[in-house]
Length: 271
Image 1 (cartoon, one colour):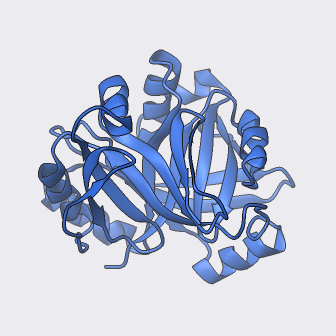
Image 2 (tube, rainbow, N blue to C red):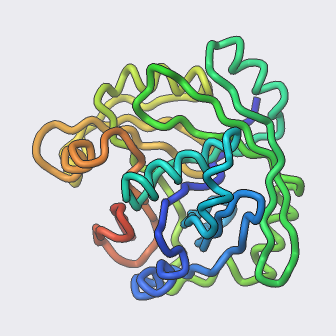
Image 3 (cartoon, rainbow, N blue to C red):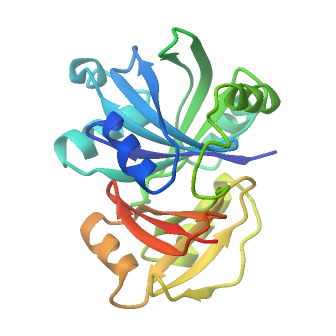
């Protein structure tokens, strides 16, 4: 079964307000559109097929009615009730949602979906996909959700290029290399995530920027960097304040070496 990284979701009070700060760092972002059936809207920044979505609640009365879309139930809980902006949830791309749903049920996960989704772009065009949400009663970390697009990867990438969504960053030609995820127990977390996506994992190593012991889950497109704090530092700060969560965007090819705190998350720019 094939899996590729699709996108990282940031929860944002005002997705439109993320465009300016990213532009100052040389990252091109655009207003996305509205998920009218879910009461949410977004802005987006693309690095090829891997991208970041800044998701906000536009009509809370609609969002609060959602039960099966666990991304929307989570944004209502964390953004509206807990006032927590920043990186929150990962999406993994596949073309086998129905088969995947049955496998997750057999593994003992609670499964929501597949359910249809769509977004109305600013030009009125409708983009469609399907979503699948596995959940675990034993996991503090929000598990990834799985997405299957109506169009092929080749069709989508050609559209991104035509719209100027890719190749428009001014800080070099950045690629979305890693998503950093802070957890309490590295081995236990990776064991559970490998029940979802059985992919290779690297040996543990020290990330001195984060003061954390880390391992990488080798997901195609953008790899997942799981980290457990070793003491005071960024990883420990995030774990103490937010619990287990995605927290780091790691970009390569940016023509700079910087670590920023931005939009409730950390961004590491590498040359």
